[in-house]
Image (tube, rainbow, N blue to C red; front, side):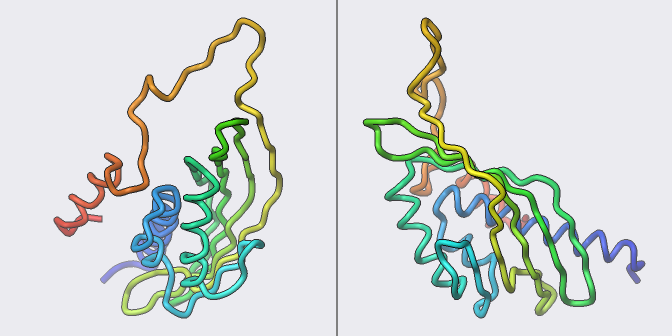
Length: 181
């Protein structure tokens, strides 16, 4: 028998794993991973999109692929409250988005919070309703460095990919195939 405190920790951990999978899925434009974070009847209000979560996934992946050459979602603290088979979670997020237009390299930075209602169905936690609250946005022209300064360039590093060849995605799928999450 699991103690109530241990069950609370297990539930919170399962919810945090969903939040992590969402960030990975959106940054890698992984449709299946994103869809698996939401219940089929879930809703998502991202401001620029408000409706069924399935529609959000269909909306956001083409938008990201067209508008941004890369995105990185960083999750901060999460305040999770579980009540039976429902939970509320507020999670801080920083999103960095590199605009695809190479004639004027720009980074969009966004600070906000995901406000989620989770449900546990069949022992599994997923998002039932999500709302993005944006606290600030900063656009940076990253092609401008101080006189004489040189910044790192992408060719110095292994680059991420959105087509399934990204090393992190490959490793994740390998372990997922083993039944580990």
